[in-house]
Amino acid sequence: MYVAGAGPVGLAAAASAQLLGAAVVIVGDLNEQRLAQARSFGCETINVAEGDPKDQIEQILGVPEVDSGIDAVGFEARGHGSDSGHEAPATVLNSLMDITAAGGALGIPGLYVTGDPGGVDDAAKEGSLSLRLGLGWAKSLSFATGQCPVMKYNRQLMMAILHDKVHIADAVNATPIPLEDAPRGYEDFDAGAAKKFVLNPNGYIKS
Image 1: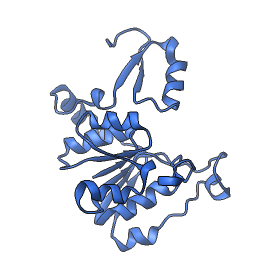
Image 2 (image 1 turned 120 degrees about the vertical axis):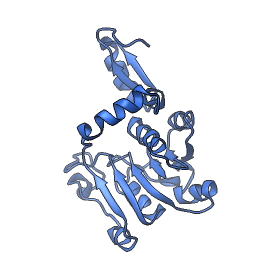
Image 3 (image 1 turned 60 degrees about the horizontal axis):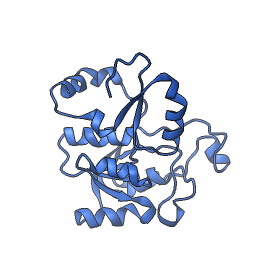
């Protein structure tokens, strides 16, 4: 399977895919530090700044498609290859529809909004994206999106963590910081740090 985005959501998705038995998990991002974090727990990686994800996936798998895909980027996505410096909100969704095999599934935990005042054009400002929905229909793809129903999975995940079936803190590089360091943590995260900062105001979490 392919996970677009190596932030904390994407890394957690990749670890979850491994837990559920995915044979190969490929993670794509522009940030080499985040890609290194994905490799640290056994993921294959591609740098989408270096070209079309489809071509890079073929180099890994021998075929240019995966059984399922995850959009862990959302509306702030950027283009691929030479367009990686420009915002392109629909890029990840359209790419996933192209990459995912017929009959496959797309999970979309990445955030999409009903309005974006800073959008690249009038359509993006209203949360409207130019999607190749016809391609998704023709390939009989299924889509799941929206906020995570946390309580549905909470107990199963808790038990998996307690019994060492998944090392999620290691996967997302969870890093406790005191409350007074919160501004720095937000700055580092915004700059693309390969960490999941956890505010630790009372010092209960040992680093």
